[in-house]
Length: 199
Image (cartoon, rainbow, N blue to C red; front, side):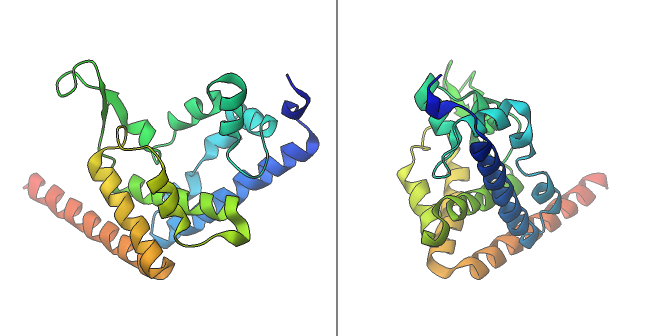
């Protein structure tokens, strides 16, 4: 283990402050959308030993510690733990295909409420890592620069991009207002279809 990968008190407290600040921003944004339970439970696994100690070890304050672990070991054990427990990550929704792509990987369409939480997560991450340099176009630019095409379901990718473009073009109030309206409409549609099914 190199000197720079040792856990220090400074890295430990810095990591704790970063993940807690991120959680609080996501919580506030989820509350704006009426996703209270998701806001309260968002990223709690980051405080588990499997994720927290790795995060503290590779903490820089400039990027996800998972990237530091990847550079050091070739993969991120903290990320593998995290994505398997948090439904707002599209990687949670990847399965094997037995029909469409024989023996291949198949992305599954994410439920709306988790796409909305993913939107909040990406906005919060940009705010935390960019600080005062944050611009409303940053989450969209990060999404467009990524290589999610093969592993994110096309419907999920399209919806997330639409929300990020709305944020970039019209700002937070318009984006959160539109997304909340769509969530409310989806809830009423689901309730009505359940009532119809019960008859």
